[in-house]
Image (cartoon, rainbow, N blue to C red; front, side):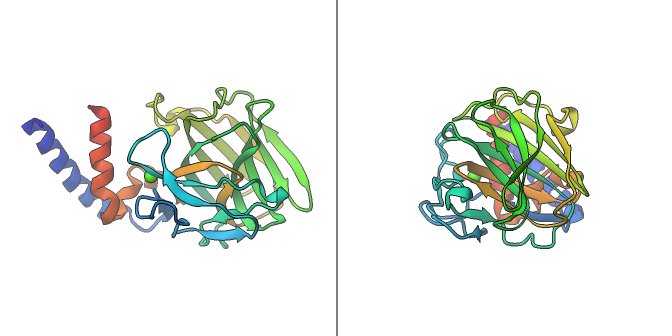
Length: 246
Ligand SMILES: [Ca+2]
C-alpha cells in the first residue's frame, strides 16, 4: 500500500473521531450486523409480531465478507414474524436509511410506526408493477401511495433507501447502492404520501428481505457518518470506504 493511502486512512480516522464527539446523541438506532454471529438471530432486534420465524444473520450474497439480516419466513399476513428494533415504541418523527435486497419476486419491504400486528405502515415493493407502495395495516390493508418510477427495483441487487417520517407526511428516496454515488439530498423522492392514523412506532422488516446498514435518526445531519459514534465499527467502515474508492 502506498504511503499516501496510509496517511489518508489515519487522517480519516482522526477526523472521524473528532467529528463524532459533536454528533452523538441524535441517532436512535443503527446496525450493520457485523457484530452478529452467522446463523443467529440479530441480537440488536426484537420480534414485533410473533409468527413463523426463520430470521437469521447471513453472508451477503452479493458483497463478500459482509453480514446482513435475512428473514426467509413469509409475510405477517400469512403468519410470518416481523422483526423490529424494539426501541421505537415512542418514536414519532424520524429518518431511516437502510440497504435492502429482495431475494425473490414477491410483495416485501419494511414497516414503520409499528406498534403491533394490526397497527403499522408498510412500504413494500410490488411484484406485479415493480413500484413502491405505502400501505396502512389496521384490520386489513389500505393503500395510500404508489411511486411513479422506482427504477425497476430489480431483485437480487442492493438498493439504498431513505424514509422520512414527519407528522402525517412520508417520503421515500432510493438509489442503486453500487452505481449511484449522489447523496440522498441530491435526489428527488420517488414516493410521497400523507396518512394520519398512527402517530408513533418502530421500524422493521416485512417478509423476506435482506437488510443492512440500518440507521435511524432524528436529523439528516446525523447520517454524514453514522458509524462514527460507534468506536467498534468506526475503523471497519472507514477502511471499506477507502477500498471502494480505490
Ligand atoms: Ca453488514
